[in-house]
Image (cartoon, one colour):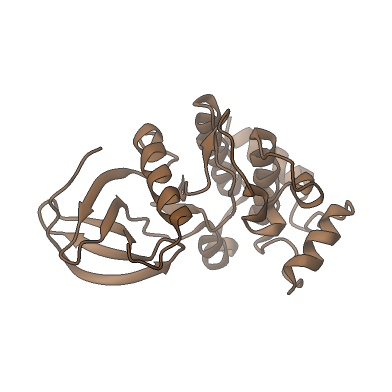
Length: 247
């Protein structure tokens, strides 16, 4: 593990996660803007949160050199004794934010390029026997128009045994088998299902099933085989034209 001495300035909170806050900082020594993911260790913290943080560190060390995976610089310890992951800062926020802000400016060729690069990143994870297990549009960041897969807290090695993993994640992106069978172990096909939902979102601009306020009712609805209707933006001639430009 690479431990860093980081002198930072101008902190800004950019997110709140299960581990703690995520801050945007200017790294004075290198003139980089970085994201610090903070683990606040105290007596009340859930041991699974610590395990998830450590798990993410281990996996990021292995995969962060791929252009479609968030770059991991190392670990630092701040003056309060909290450990922080030092990560690449994505200037266009999450894929969901990016689509909401830029959708009308994106040609089909742009959307197809985003989808293809996410697929490249996911294939790289699977080639390294890593199952992400929580893939959705908020766990894909956009930096200089390039998608970066992030948030590996629930990820695992292909043969690693996990418990209760099916209870986590955003339901609309979760493989239906996980919703109807609490003993079902997520696998690479689960990631592919999540990727399919992301493709729908890229084509339509909005998240899948936004009208469901209850997680339980959405889980029941999906487990019965219900799916989103194709978006009006999904004209096949548009997709064929875009595909020809991306070959």
